[in-house]
Image (cartoon, rainbow, N blue to C red):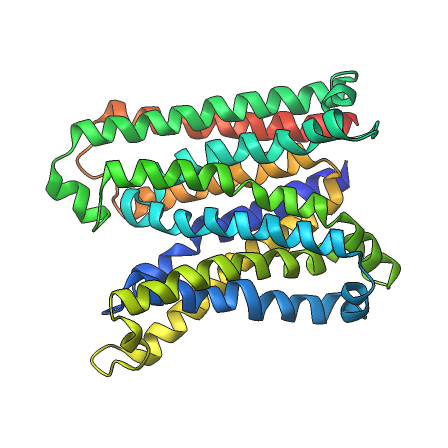
Length: 352
């Protein structure tokens, strides 16, 4: 039971980081979105993952050098797909804000990320463990799957609260919390982000041989996924760098990085803080997953904690200013349902 509690706590820390990382970006002044996003991304996808691997995985270079090409290839490709999800995720926060944007994105990501790996094992491999079929045969797996369903209900309720907000509040109140609010653009990028962000979990599964090799090299099992994260992040960096650099040239915003009219040092530090905080979600996610040993439960816990934290931040930043008591009650109900689902998933892991 202690390992389960530790796993849930680590997922909470990761979810808190994920739900909070965008806050420093909101304080960057006189820079275009693509400039702040790619600068923070250099910390998120390149520098901090490398530091984490250096500090926690002895001989990480040998682990990469000894890996099969197919393992590296598919881990990287899923990282590229996830990078598109991450790019559109940033746009979702830009257009919808933390509360509504997170609810929609995490709902889709939770479903695809949690259920696709066990479903894939059922349909395309000979694996007997970690499949949907195997989870259905015992009480622990059943609790986890029901917890997934309950979590999605909670996420849908949070999304409903966001739609109520859209109908209730004035344009002035909308833009007070989200400066570039656009429901149409936001919904499009949110759907793309929600589906493709799930590729991160697929990348973790594709890179499982890297995690096993990391343990063989002497790494603590808590940090077994840190080499895998490096490869996934390279894929994410590829996608985001191509897009952001292209936007820098298209919008002639490449001068942002040396624009003396902006608070340069402050902007650089804010982007570094945002990028580092962003990666910490997966640093702690990897540790939590190593203690729960269940893809579906780890992914849903991570998504659920992100939604809870982001909605609380949304309240703090008055993204719900001008909404009715009924609207805020729906939001609260959604958060409560998600908390119930977290308890169910934790219980299911204990029964395993």
